[in-house]
Length: 151
Image (cartoon, rainbow, N blue to C red; front, side, top):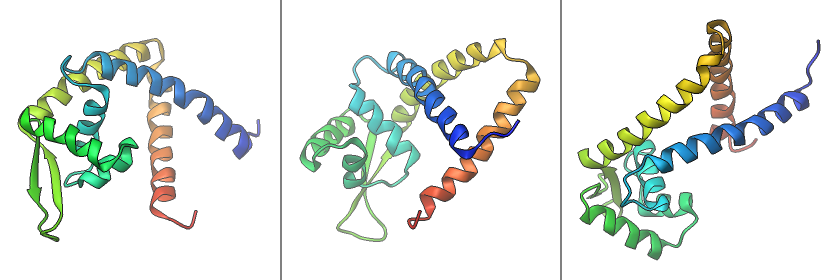
């Protein structure tokens, strides 16, 4: 059976939103109740992008710099995020999670991991190995896509 690149792309486009919806629902339902969804997304972004700037966070969330600054101020006051001067540019502030910020995210991630894992019980070990191999391959392909601005 021959599968075209378009057929493969269509399956990815069909399945990825479904999986992401489950992940988002789980992450949101297991976040600390005093965190808004944008605050939670900010914590995830900062964890995944160490030393991100306020502008980086605003761009990711699609918010204004002013709105993002107010939100991050609240996270700093709650001891979930730390601001510090950038070693490369003293005019730039960088953001990182505190131990408490990491712990808050870890709890939500573990609950989500448990939920996704429980859904995969119905798939055989061989099929799970195939999924892992395929996901690793997709990670390589799309990491190159993001790193090459000409594509």
